[in-house]
View 1 (tube, rainbow, N blue to C red):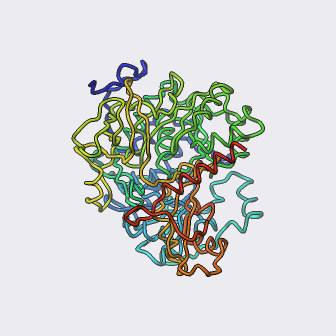
View 2 (view 1 turned 90 degrees about the vertical axis):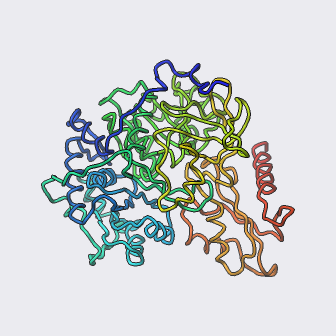
View 3 (view 1 turned 90 degrees about the horizontal axis):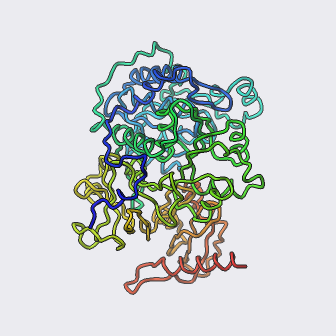
Length: 563
């Protein structure tokens, strides 16, 4: 059996066995600012920032954070949507010697507190928006947080939008409490921009703690070193040879707090000196308007975004005419959707595969040919895909036979934060066990047969049924609950809960139960619907079984499509 069967069909322009040299992650900003100081790094709602000024703000942030005590081993959280301040905070934390902990604005107060405590986050950086600040202020009062750094959202806007926002969007601005925990973001940057140099070992020092449920649904912090993320940027860039340094434009609408956007949008764009046109979130009409104006050359999205664009009445006139590198991740890309883009727009969407634990990209379909139907692609440079026997992990499966997909490469995480037990479960002789089942064909293309058990992918975000089920069980009337993913034309999947009550005569309604769980779950975790049943399917040994419910929902979905 050929050890590396992908070599025979590897893209001619890419060298698989190339090796990459790691640097501290903030070197991305320093190197590009030296090469393209006057290029626009970020355009946020019309307010631009050059690479020279971006580096200056990063240095000021680093020194300001050092003044708050940030050094090696200090964990600093970011709780923001996409904005220029996010990137400044991210690289400033790294240059100060600290470790970034990304926090999703979708999380509930309870989830945020859990992550703060588990990650040992001491400082949080956020904005004065009502959708962010009140929640994080409560978290600060109930957790170990020592400092809450708050910036005014309007400051990041150009004139006159900054004035108009304060006048007409006043309800969106929170009243900030200037207590002992409060630190003014602008004040933090009022220094000479000369932080104390920190000796970073890229291979050993952790740059980012990125939370994931892995294959179990129990949140764990994947420790991604400077080398893990920096090299993954180089790997992705080497895969897309059409990229020209200093000449690219990308729309940043994927959330930077998500590992896919962190590496492929924020970090990669800086490495190639691209102009990042930031969108706080993906809003279809706004994104199309921006793409028509900015004419992006690079685009990264999740399948739900590509679906929304393809279903728009203006399609294909949605501003993607100049796109030469188009990446999809976070969830499987429907085959027909990919064909539509190739046929109608001559845009080849390269579907990739990755995990938080691999920083995240490890496999991708080549840009020099059509995406292979049903395949996640070939290993990117300096990365191996190994299919092992789940019953005998030392045994490598023959080509064409299914087994557990394992990944080996420099982008594989250092381990899980404070979880040596969980680390030992997934690390096997330098390989990462993904938990996904698949096979590799004769030409080295990998196919996934079954994703990590029970995982629901909602618009690219991982939702773990166990987390949702635990919330349902907090309601005193709930007896049993099973949560599965049901097909959703826009987001790919949405959770659905099947519930039995302790008292069959209970008058609890779906709306009442939905209101109960809504307060305790992130937006992406909230069920699309709740169905009450007299009993739920169980296995022969009495365990709740999901497969029957999955089959039922799949059949109903297919019937609706047929009708």
